[in-house]
Image (cartoon, rainbow, N blue to C red; front, side):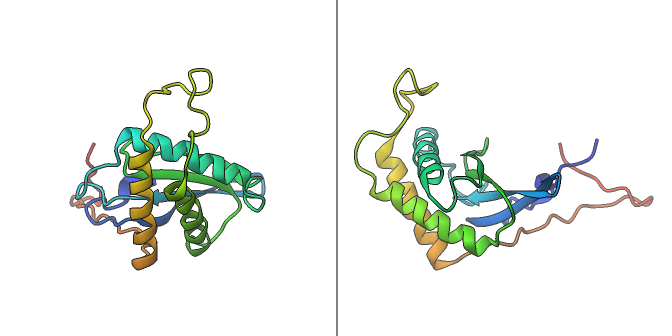
Length: 171
């Protein structure tokens, strides 16, 4: 079985930022997956699960209502490791363009007041698992990180090879 590309990223040196995880094609249409990395994996705590759930709802609502982006958004949601989110878009855009979009989206989260959209028992699979105050704190921190030091190049992992040239991979 081939190692998937995201497992060749050095997560011990990965900084918060925005990275192009992969580009696929549906016919001639590029579909780009962006790694919206909010915390430094294995160096900082993951984002609290209730906070990232709230961020998911608020940013998804923001993106799917933005006149410029709503028809380009395929998916927005948290990573299993809870260190960030994936944004999947029709098309290919430089990370700097996505940075501006994420700054706007996360500012919307940090300034949000009122009921979080889609958080009733009828509209959410886990409506009790939300934390707006913590989501706002995480959003402010992420905007600050994107503005202060923007990272957008994945660090690679040097994999050892045996005498036959075969690479070793961890599980």
